[in-house]
Image (cartoon, rainbow, N blue to C red):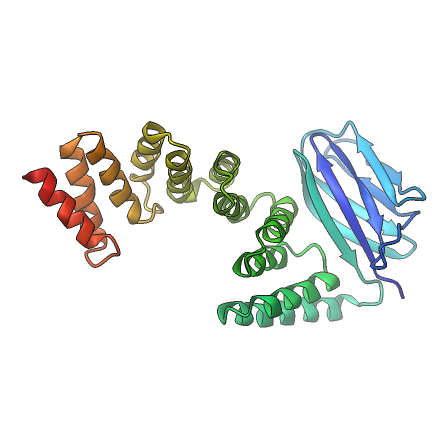
Length: 288
């Protein structure tokens, strides 16, 4: 029985894409249904090239269903906010129990391989799970980590965006997208994803502001970086190194008292941390 893959592009208030089989050939006759809350479902059938387009959708998060014959893929929550490529698989030969067992085994095995830095093997395991259930955002996120570990940043970015699109209420996923963009030198883009993470998960605001501050500094915006570090410093989720970075920036601006206070706070939290010696030297210099 044929396994079908669907490549989807999500745009602001619209959904378009192409459905293909693993052979690469287009898959016509697939019904794509989006069901906005409080509105009638909107459907379209893929054409001879496997393409479809839906427009006029309200911006937000909607359930999406793809079906052909007796094969159905359910995506409970799909973010329809901006352009995004989504890759979907389904295997009509699998029962729900078999599907769940494959997903659980693939996730456990892949995670173990990831911890051993066997990134290519881990990626294959996560993909095995996704072929069983394409809607598993945790598998997409883990696949992204495997690609990043293997220095395949574009692939990692795609997989992590998949996780974010399929689980738009999880703050870790936009944060991970931002971190990949940061590594790629795309700092301004990264800020937008860190901000989204903070909106989705206010409880992690300190970490996300810390990451935004790093982007601002990389963009040459020292004033904005200081502001973000200051705001992050009142949140327990900010990494301790934020106090060191804030102290260093304040020292460079000649704000000695606040700089010393921030550096001392770093030493209280991490007296043997990686910046401990540098912090002590800087405090001595500022206090001299």
